[in-house]
Image (tube, rainbow, N blue to C red):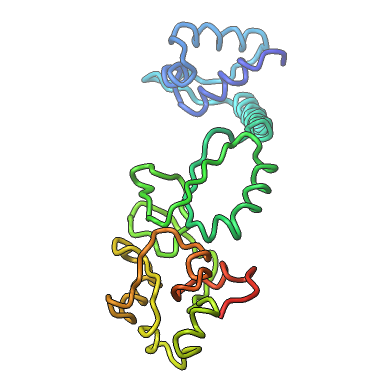
Length: 249
């Protein structure tokens, strides 16, 4: 059979049970469907459908076989289309990612390089910010956060556990009675803290509970190891960010 439209028409009539339904499914008018079906039956020399009262069409044995073959042809054509479209479809466009500076500098950069090799059509826009940007308002598409998402329409997955500890430069520790024996002694040092708007970050909440307000020498949104390395204060810091430093206490 040279023309795919012929078995396609037979399959549509078989599925709809009427010529009107088949014509609607194929996007053609009733008279065109009627003319084409008659032409197929004439060319093959066999009746494919019995015309029943009320406009119903019931497939004959020959019509059943032709409809079954047409369905297999349709399945193969759809599978081929999915296969070709799937291979040709490449992800492209901007992707805005937000992350804290600790994760961005210590971990994320090398992963972004690999991601770029796998998806060269995607341009990553990395927003390094310790604030929790809103995904719902499209301030970012993907967020790496130290907290669980609270928006009900977002999907999240835990990536890893992150350890935290108190760090200070040696000069700072030596000038204030040495290393802490317990965390409740932290207040005797000057302490670097998060800005007061950092709500919902567990590490920030813990530090605010442990340390009196007057013990904070300053607060910041940017957690860089340079702050406590200057020898003026101690900081409650992510261990991940300290791993490359040889002389913290």
